[in-house]
Amino acid sequence: MTNLLLYLVVILLSLSSENLQPKEKSYQLIWSDECEQEGRAVDATKWFLETNAPNNGSWYNDELQHYTDRIDNAYVSEGSLKIIAKKEDYTYSGTTQGYTSARLNSKVSFTYGKVEVRAKLPQAQGTWPAIWTLGSNLETVGWPACGEIDIMEQLFEDFEMIQCAVHTPDTHGPDTVVKQVPVSNVTENFHVYGMEWTPEHLKFFVGDEHYFTYEPQVKTPENWPYFNDQYVLLNIAMGGALGGAIDPNFTQDQMEVDYVRVYQKK
Image (spheres, rainbow, N blue to C red):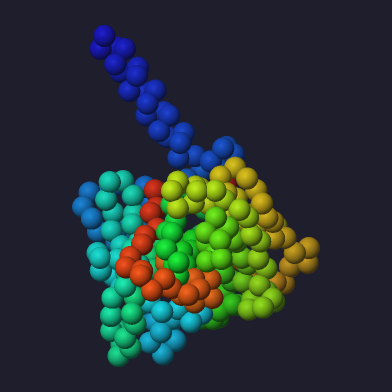
């Protein structure tokens, strides 16, 4: 009986390890947040909660929230990270906004690899959830020269339509490269939103479905600033370009994240 129990434990541990690996065996896990830590606070060894609004006390894209580092807006419970957008007046750096939320920046940065985030999206009109990356050289070269990769953004016109986007010096603003894809039950069920970044291409996935590739044939810093490290961001904005008009009856909503995983080739 003892030998049988030990055998079952070994099998379960093996299966758990395999679940952390992508289907392609050429990749290995280099960083993750499984959102299972004890207590309610976001893991400060893995995330920085950004609060300093860069646009004269506000955020870009006509967004209407302040980001905070309070547990009210981001916490872990029951095996998942909750990012909470709330209706409340909040003053930061002399500017008052009518909504609060959280913006998490990963403390890991990497060049080339895969990102997978298993998440359930908010359903309130006016929320703008996003899973994305930014170049770690943002402070020195600015945006969009640092490069931005939007792995998942939800559209206010249709909550079951999500998009990826690529922001570079050549492809930003009205020239942004965007691809939309329908995904069912995004507010009720978890889905895995993924991106693969190699020296040749960016590929975007929902689950196992590959739905878009960005692959300029001749790469320059203007169309491919992806030679340097990027870091992962998770947030919910309010209103703005993709959030749209906010429901006047809105009180709060959340994006729930089961895990965030970063892989690189062996």
